[in-house]
Length: 184
Image (cartoon, rainbow, N blue to C red; front, side, top):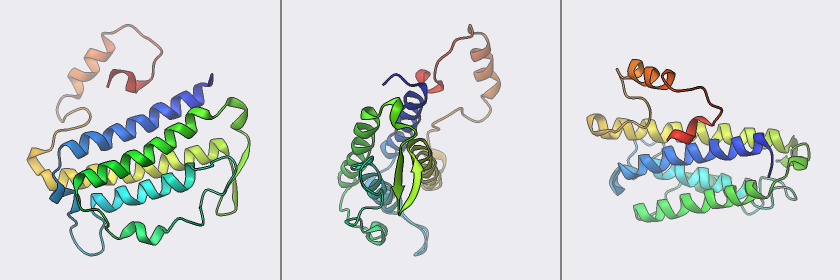
């Protein structure tokens, strides 16, 4: 795969997966199942939804509609996990499906039309749609973890009141072309 767009999107997906992974490390099983009320989703439920979406969208990506007949989206919002390990295993299944599919794509595939619920998307549009969707939900996961952990939360980015030092360190370095996740 010799395409900067495809390489960049893979790195972006890896970045968001990494945010989730680093969040899960900080949480115990009970915290993964916590929700503030009956109308909000726990982290476990968000993982179930993201993974259900990934399996549907990325399985036979170029040849079948992204909303598979076998997907039960409503069931994604009902907890079926018993342990933290169940959640993490399912999370990995979704990402594995996504990354295997992206690694097979070629530059010539980017303008092909694929369908999600009978709506045509170029492959580029479909990738962007999913990248934004997963970033949205992973942001929810991180926010819920910060609420649950309060002062025990370990930041995943530039810590408060450290931006000046962070920027100084970056600007003291020689200019170089690389993806921002290469230093993480």
